[in-house]
Image 1: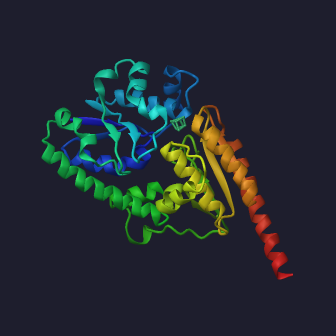
Image 2: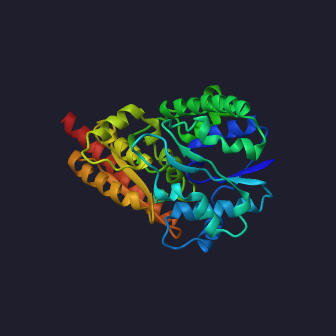
Image 3: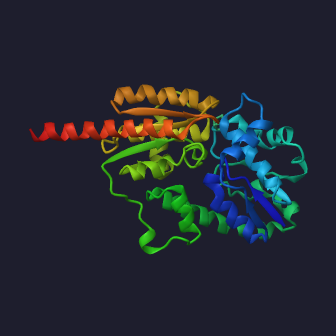
Amino acid sequence: MRIGLPRALLYHYYYPLWKSLFEQLGVEIVISDITSKQLVQEGVKVTVPEICLPIKIFNGHIINLLSKEVDYIFIPRFIGVESGKWFCPKFIGLPELADYTIDGVKSKILTVDIQGKKESTCEWTNYRPLCEALQVTPKELKKALKTAERVWQHFRDCCKQGFTIEEAEKMCSEDMRGSERTAHHTHDITLGVLGYVYNVYDPFVSMDIIKKLHGMNVRVITFEMLDEKRIHEKFKRKSKNLYWTFTDKIYGAAVELMENHQIDGLIHITAFGCGPDSIVGKMMELDSEKFKKPFMTIRVDEHTGESHLLTRIEAFVDMIKRQKISERRRELA
Ligand code: SF4
C-alpha cells in the first residue's frame, strides 16, 4: 500500500513520527514534491481566494500526490494536543476542506482525529482508525506507536540542541553523522526567526530564510529549539490566553527571546490571510518596542518576489550589525 504525505503544514513537525509509524506498519510512504511556484499555482487555482497561503499550498501538495498513484493521502485532523488549547480551525476542518476543494480526493483521504494531552499525538486512540484502513491489529498499532514516539522525541531533542528541523530530521534518519552534526554556526549576530514550521521551513514561503541568514553569518533560533516549559511559563504570565496551540508557542518563544540579551533581533514570518497571526504579530510588535529589540515582519503571499525579500533581510541584518559595532566602540571609548 502507498500512502501519500503532503509536504506541507504539520508535516514539517511530525514527519519523523509518521515515517516511523507507517513504515513499521508495512506501508510505502510517498512524499509530495518540494513546494515550487507551479505547485503553489495548482493549489491557488482550486482554493477559495480568502483562505491563508499555507492552505493553498497544502492543496497544491494534494494535487501533486494525486498524480503519484497513491492509495491514500494522509490528512489528519488536528484538534488539540494540550488541555484548553486548540488548533486553528483550518486544521480542525482540514479533511473536509480538501474534500470540498479538490475533485477526486474524497476516496483517497485517510484521516485520524488528533485530540489528547500529548504533543507527540501518540495516544493510540488517536490512530485507531488506521487498524481498519491498513488491516493491522491494535497490538501492532500500539507497538508501532511506541517506537514512533521514541523516534519523534529524539527528533525534538535534536531541535532543542539548536539543530534546525531539516538537520534534526536527517539525524533521525541517520543520514547525518559525526562532523556533519554542528548546530553552532560561527556568527556575528543572533536572530530569532518566529513563525509556524510550515512557513519557516517551506522553501517557497520563507525562501530559505534560515540558509540565507546563515550565509550572512547570523545564528538563527526558532521556537522549536527552545525549552517548552519556559515558553509555557512566559505565556502563562499574560492575562489572556490565545487558545491556539502553535500561536501560543510562538508568542511564548518571542517573549523568551526578547528577554534574552544574546538575541539581537527578531523576524516574524507570516503568510497572507492568517487570522491568528494578525493578533500575535501585533502583540510581538508591541512587545519589541517595550524590550527595545529590532523586529521585522515578513508577510508572504503567492506573488512575493525573492529579490525584494532578500533586500529587506540584508538591510535588517546590516542595521543590527552596525548597531552592535557602534555599541562595542562606545564600550571601549
Ligand atoms: S494558523 Fe494561520 S497560517 Fe496556519 S492554518 Fe491557521 S490561518 Fe492558516
